[in-house]
Image (tube, rainbow, N blue to C red; front, side):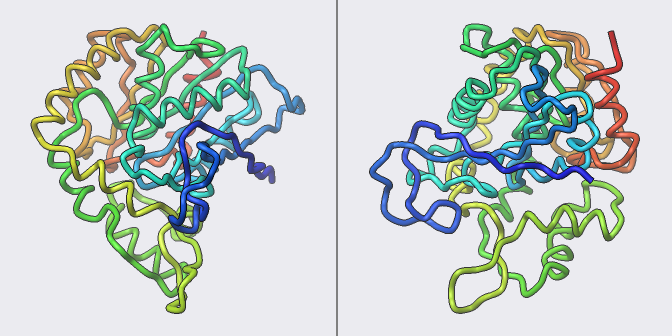
Length: 313
C-alpha cells in the first residue's frame, strides 16, 4: 500500500528553536518550516497535476490519508501540516496563527511544487485558506486553481460553532494511550459522522505525540497557542469578516464543489444555498448523518471528490 513521503518547505517568519516540540528562544533565522506529506502513485515524481489538501483548525495533514491514496493515482497529492500543527514548526509569535499568514505559507509551498494544473481541497480552515488564494487573482500562484473543493465551510461561519470550538481549543490535555486519546477526541468530534474503530484510531494516531516532560504519556500535536488569535475573535469582528469573505468568494473563477454535512453547525443550509447562487455558483453535495465536518474517508465521500476533480469535463 502506498505511503506518503514527508517533506519540508522554509517559509518567512520566525519559529521557535524547539519546533514542533515546544516554544523556546527564537531562531536566528526569520523562517519556519512547514511540513507536507506527498502522495504519488502516478509513476511520475514530477507529475504536473497537483492536488493540495488542507486540514481544519486543530487537525493535520494525515487526515487526508484515505482520500489522498485514492487521488494519487491521478496526480501528486500534497497534504501540508499548517504551521503550528503536526510536523511543522511552532511560531514564536502566536498572532501569526491566522489565515493570511497560512495563505502566504501556501504560496511559498506552491512556488516550490511548480504545478501546471492545480486543484485545492480544503476542510474548514483549509477551505478558508483556499478561498483566500482563489479569490485574489493578483496573487502570484504558479498556476490558477482549476477546481476548488470547500468542505463544510463558507463565507459565513456560525458563531455558535466558533464558541463550541473555542471551548476546547488549546486546553491542556494528556493521554496515557492511543485508545484513551481516541475516546476523548471522539467526544469532541462525533459530529464527523460514523467511523469504524479502526478508522478512528487511524485518524487519532497523528493527532498525538509523546510528552517530553517527566509526567509522560501523550499530548496533542498542535501548539496550544493557536487558541490565542482564535479567542480574540468577537462576534462583531466575525460578522465584519463575512463581507470580506463574500468578496473573495464572488471573485472565484475555479469550478467549485461545496460539501456539507446536513447536521453541520458551522455551515448553515442558508449559506450553502447562497453559495450555489453567486460567485462560482458551487455545486452542493450534502451527506446525511454528518455534522462538521465530513472526514472524506467514507467511500461515497471519496467518490464525490474524485469524480469532481478527475471525472467531469
